[in-house]
Amino acid sequence: MKYILEANNLRKEYQGFTLDNISIKLVRGTITGLIGPNGAGKTTTIKLIMNMIKKNSGDISIFGLNYKNDEKEMKNRIGYVGEEQYFYQNKTIKWTEKFVSGFYNNWDSDIFSAFIEKFQLPANKKIKNFSKGMKVKLSFAVALSHNPELLILDEPTSGLDPIIRREILDLLLELKQKEELSVFVSSHITDDLFRISDHISYMVNGKIIISEVKDELLARWKKINYKPDSLPEGIEKKLMNVEKQLFGSSGITDKYQEMAGSLITGIKQGDIKVENVGLDDILISLVNGE
Picture 1 (cartoon, rainbow, N blue to C red):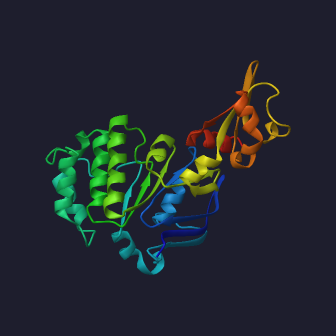
Picture 2: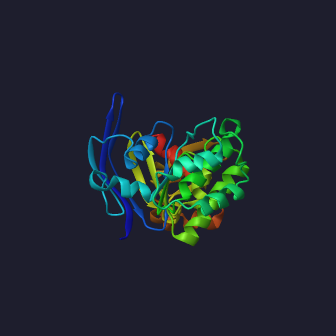
Picture 3: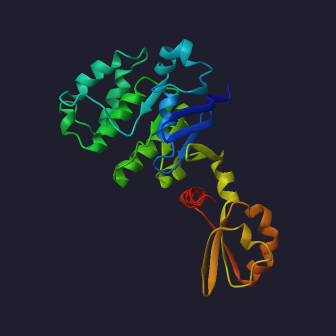
């Protein structure tokens, strides 16, 4: 089975917002990042995939199964971490494990204990005294201790300091490489997704605008810096987010491979310079309606 997750033509209607017939495919053993500004529909998408809310239309298949007939088996094979961590605040980690483990057929106490030790979490301290970073680490320990095949993450590093974010991202890469874990993660922190993702999907206003392999995406999008009158005719009209200044201008293109040949002369003369862009540059262009 090539795709561990397939969502086709998902639609969810709210007053003032519609998730508009989106489709997502996650290749087994890869990490797909869903990027979009706040309010784009990322959390709605995650909740639909997790069957936390009901869709108006569309189909969801995970492991070749569907929620109508196989929800219990599917949830046993999925790990989930949301932006908010919901635990019984007056309980300890030990109590939490005993409570949560009853929901999973494949719970492994040794794995859970290893994560608690790795994350240096106090087993006997009440969770209400945990920092946000500690609660996120506990969420990951819970999500990964029943040997999931698919990990679904909704803004898991939002609000965390850079050190904890890096620790979480490194863990995801390590697990993917060692255990062939598949990950679907939504975030507006593009630096995080740049580090770990194999595939990128952009969501704006409830629609998937772009969905492709990260390296191919970044090869196609470039920033063009150019001196006055140095661009071949018609090229400037194809640029997005053009910023003009007295001694030079710049713009972004998603068609660099098509125009590269016409820029060679200017590049050799030093009048044109081509730069790589980040995932956030692409997001800004898409949000601006380009």
